[in-house]
Length: 221
Image (tube, rainbow, N blue to C red):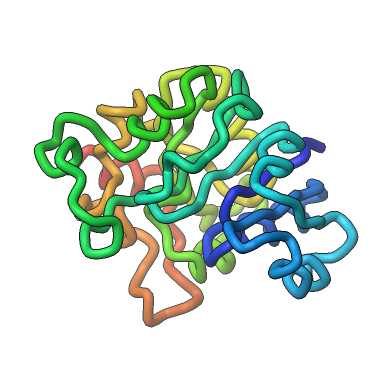
């Protein structure tokens, strides 16, 4: 089992960590406030979980999740992530992140900004289009008729396969939306694949969204 490093341990990060330890992965959690602030979460997740600094999570993780506000993407350490698959959950919310001209004019995407910053890392966009409550409630075994799919996008085929395999272990199918830029645009904020296929946020159980549902939503973007 791979060690999963988590840079950011908010709603999505902690939910991915919970699913990962359930699947038997070791996780190293981090946030901007320091390891001590994660003691309760680590205790709740059990013996497969530990807390470290952001640099430690990046260094120890064989597969790394970046789940922080987009405005802080340039704080992600570069060298420890070289050549590693990096899962990016970021979304651009101007009211939170401030205006970013290159995103406002559509010349790039949030995941491409992270990829440019990280250089040799292999960024895969994933987990950005689903509410954390639904992410926790919708995993199903392989072959289940109501198994839900999540879209992914990236420029490195091997990294996308690693992420697809990880999703399978968590209880999800993967739908390859294409390259990081073109594909990532198809499930960013405001698209048919963003949130809607998994049901209203008011329903914590969520609505299963199998592969054909996500493929159709991506095609409408």
